[in-house]
Image (cartoon, rainbow, N blue to C red; front, side, top):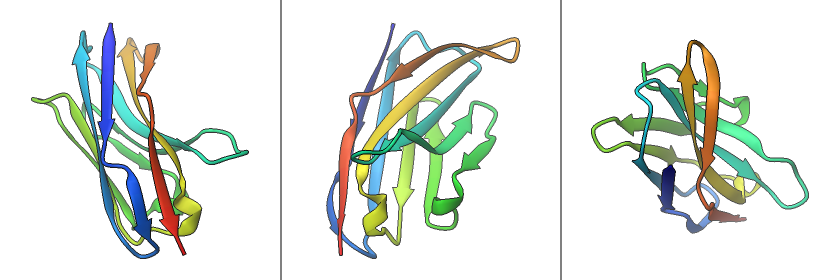
Length: 120
């Protein structure tokens, strides 16, 4: 089993910054992808950023240049530094870990979500 504990959400004014953290515990596969997704009210959950165990990084276009994803493999923790926040970034942010084997996703695990609210 994998447990994901997120922290760092909150209320911030437009232009401000927040840093999200997600600590994973349990059985973590050596080859994995850790990432952040978000879901705004009335919208589908969307990918924000991912980082693989090999360091490959992917961002959704709307956050490029503003958000930075990183990870500490020794701590099984993934971070999301969010700068220049906009009201449209308001959403519940979910941490995700995908276990990879032979190039395919074996399983995915989700955190409970943390609210990020950006006021205009």
